[in-house]
Length: 194
Image (tube, rainbow, N blue to C red; front, side, top):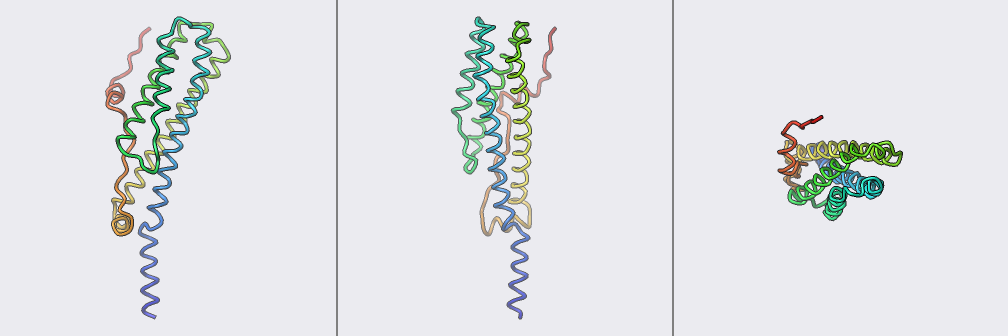
C-alpha cells in the first residue's frame, strides 16, 4: 500500500513539474520560429513581383532595385534551424532580414516619384500584400518572443527548473533581438520631411 501511495505521489510530482511542459514548450518555440521564417519566405516570394512592376515605371532607379534584389538574395541565403538555433545564427538571420526591410522601404519611397506607379493596380496590390506580410511577420515575431519567454521560465524557475536539471539540462534559449545597427535606428525618432 505504501509503495502504491509513494508511486502515485511521485507520479503526480513529476507530471506537475515540467516533465511534459518543458518538451511541449520547446516544440512551441521551434514552431514559432518556423512561422517567423515562413512569413519572411512569403515576403521574399513577393519581392520579385514588386521589383518587376516598379522596373516598368522606374527603369532609372536601378540602384534601389539592385539593393532590393541583393538584400533579398542575402536574406534567403541565411538559413536558421529552429531545433538548433544559436544566438549567432539568430543575429545573422535578424541582420539579413533587417537589411531587406530597409531596401524595401527605399523601394516603396521610389513610388512617391512616380504618380502613375502609385495608381497602378498591380503595384497597389503588391504593396498591400507586402504591408500585410510585414504585419504577419510582426505577429509571428511576437509569438516567438512569447514562446521563448515561456520556455525560459520553465527551465529557470522552480519547480520545473528542478525537473529540467534532473532530466533535460536545457539552457535558456536566445531571445529575438535587433541587430546592433537596427537598435540605433529604432532608438532614433523617424525624420519626416515635406
